Length: 349
Image (cartoon, rainbow, N blue to C red; front, top):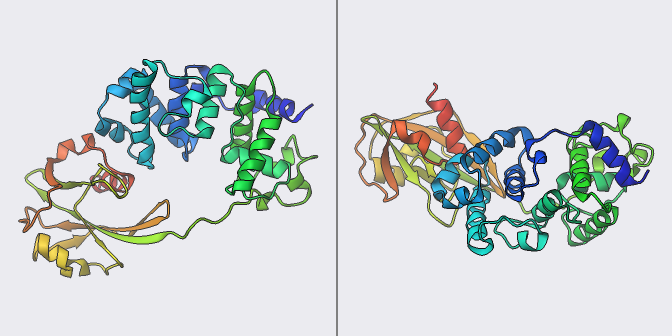
């Protein structure tokens, strides 16, 4: 059997039964593909169901407010994906008459849709002859064919694209693409791959040459910078003070607690002596809540501390983006993952 035939045969026996594989609707497939970018299937599945239920059609998605989209997305991270989805839905209405495109050349023009996503949607919805290349596919190809060219280099992208196109079978590219992604996700895993039962073990270069854990090769990115955020919980008369982030930084338009950023960490309690704290809160009593929480973003490490201020404290100076909200309304506001996760634990404590 050819490589593709062996892979598809494996898939028909072991492939995952996922709801978006039961349709050829490009809109539904698009939802699943974007939600699952940089997200595990078990984590993304509830979000997929949530979005399909709330936005059964692209018209429903396009007519929604961005804040609702972000609220439904909260907890997934990478909020630019949600914003681009909203923009793409609006463009489908304005440019394609509300009919979600199923061809690569049209899909690639939508906000947030790159080569992988366009190829996946086109092959799954219209059986267009397009090979997909995601992390799972890179790993499978690099190991089986013994390719040590870095997958994130210009040369590597070219090498793997040519190989992926060469291996793509004529006739049913969609099933093949599902097969190779599933094979990478559940068999040829990053750690503890199932080499002993692999259908390619007699021809896999990485296995035969004992290089499984050395492949694929990836160039190191630029170093991450550390940022130190100090959040303040201010409550008064069943209300809580929140701040809406602006443009030009992480978490645009999402809600969080009032925050002071410092260039280095402060020992517990010392933040009360910071000039900005004195400016906003004066000598208000402060109580730390938990320890440091590390939150990793692309090229940024956020070190967050949370503090509770005395009940009903008078704010000396309030930023324009700070506003009080009823505690019962907090769940209706879109919050970034750091705040969403903290608040969920805080209110249960």
